Image 1 (tube, rainbow, N blue to C red):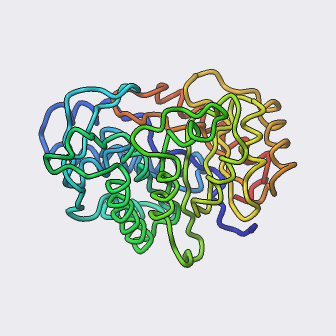
Image 2 (tube, rainbow, N blue to C red):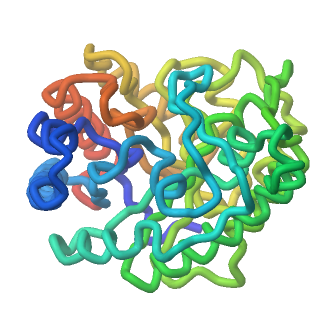
Length: 346
C-alpha cells in the first residue's frame, strides 16, 4: 500500500513540558495559563518544524497525562485520589460516559493554523480506559454494568471524535493502549477488567470506517515494550481484528520479539518503528539501529514504514522521562535515521 502519506518522522505526541508551563498550571490562574499554553504550543510546533518532523502535535501541553483528553472531557468519571500500579492517578467510571463536546478537535484546529505540516492527535484507546476505570463495586450505584458496556460507550465517543478531528484537518490520529502487547504474550498478562475478545471488539468499534479520506492514517500503539515472547496466533488476531492503518510498535531493544511483531503484520498495514529509546539519554549507535531497520525492511516494504521514539517523552506532565535537551537530541537522531532510510523524500 505504498503511497506518499506515510508521515515518516513521527513521535508519540507527548513532549517535555516547559518549566513556565508547569509553573502557570500550579499558579491556578486560568487566563495566564491559557496564554502560556498558547505560547508553549507555538514554540513546540516551531521546534518540530526545525527538526523536520512530518507531523506536529501540541506536545500534550494542555493535558495532565495521555488519558486526560477523555477523562477531563467526558462526564461519568471521577478521580479517586489513589494511584494505578504504573503511578498514574486512578480514575473510575461512576456512570456511562457522555461527551460534553469535542475532546481535541478544537485545539487541533488551532494547531493546524500554526503550520502547513500535518497535525497529529493522540487519544487513549477505549479498551484501555475501560480496562483501567471499570469498578465492579459501582455497578449497584449507577456505574456501568460491565467493562464491555463501558468500552462500547467510550468507543462511540472516540469514533465520533476521530471523525471530527479528520474534518478539522488532522491527518494522523494515534490511539494508545499500553496493555495490548500483554494480551499477546505467550504468558498473557492480567487483562484488567476487559477480556481479550472484548478488547478487540471495543477497539475495532472505535476505528471502524468504510473508507479513510486521502492521506488520513489511524494508528494504534499497543505498548511501549515488547514482551519476552509472543503467541503468534493471538498477535495475528490482534492485527486482523482492529482495522487501523498503522501499528506503532516498540523497536528499540533489538530483540527477536520486536521483529516478530513486524513479521506478523498484514501486508496492507503501515508500521511506525519506535527505534530510539525515549527513557534513556544516551544516543543509540546509528549503524546498530540501521541494521535493525534493515531486518524489518526484509519483512515489510520500507515505503510502508515510519520511524519514531519508542514512546512519548512525558506521558505524565510532571514526570518527563528525559530533559528537554535530551529529547531534542533523540528527535534529531530520528530525523537522521529517516534520512538514511529515505533520503530527503519524507
